[in-house]
Image 1 (cartoon, rainbow, N blue to C red):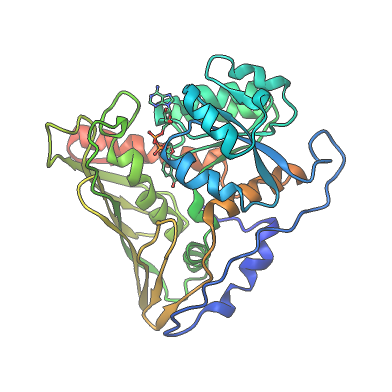
Image 2 (cartoon, helix red, strand yellow):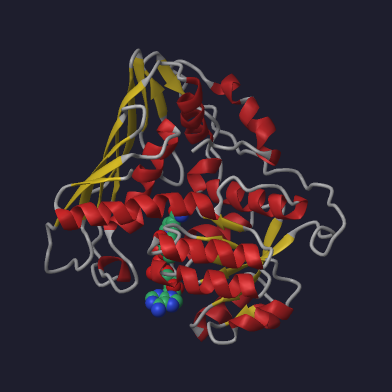
Length: 374
Ligand code: NAD
């Protein structure tokens, strides 16, 4: 997996070394979103901003995405898709939405006729990602789909095909790819400042007390691996720039009466270069770390996948980049790529690569052992 550094953020990324300081505590500034870009001719490209509809108005849409989109330069909230009339009313008032840009899950396909909505952002429970990504693509809308992309690799392939067939772009909500400390980890995978990468230890978990939630059950593809486990999986992949050749995994339940889906999951990956990654996830405790041990030193992010406050250290000193709004950067760059018909940083294929490994993790858990990837 070679991380791409395309387009509007490239100039910013190239200047990032200016921010590497030993022992620097601050340097937290707001990163300007990409400028408004001159647009080529074409149906969508004559717009200065693309309209985006959030689909599924739960926690992530309400608390994180909707506020972040207010900071975007290339996209704005033009619509919503919700099954709850009271939410539709509240969002209409709060975000000054036109009534004709508010859809429910039954009349959603009519969105095809709406020129004010260019992008549909699918923020539904995991098992619904496939259906609504395909319906959005068939309506001629570009799609951002939240992680995990889908439940199986086959579903991911169907989503990619539907978007290709309908000539729309598909991106996955992997916000860390837009975060400067994470981009430095990706650079280190390529440049190997500390020599060969030998061992990665990474984990992301939180203590879930609302165990009535769909994320604690299997029906809508909940479970710690799907919810939080994709972060250490992603981290192991982007810290090496490689795809794993073997997977072994185990799962545990601390509260078996509360969790039908996996509560605590450990997995180990081996990469073609020999690097080993030990990865942890769970709904049982709060932790968030990425540590990379190399031939001639080490580096870490702690936390590595939180919405803000990402902190980096290397064996020769601290590294600090400016704080960014990850989601605003993500949505802005996706909109820019659509307007300019440029390749996306995080594609459907990237989401698929994770789900291929997740399938093997579940297979290994089922077999109680190691499953070869090749
Ligand atoms: P949530 O439960 O808070 O929200 C889900 C929304 O889907 C709710 O508004 C619910 O009403 C709606 N919904 C529609 N049909 C439903 C059905 N059949 N059953 C249950 N709910 C239904 O969940 P969330 O935390 O907002 O997560 C939504 C998606 O966003 C998930 O895929 C999750 O992995 C992803 N997510 C990503 C991040 C990130 O940092 N990228 C963070 C949180 C969540």
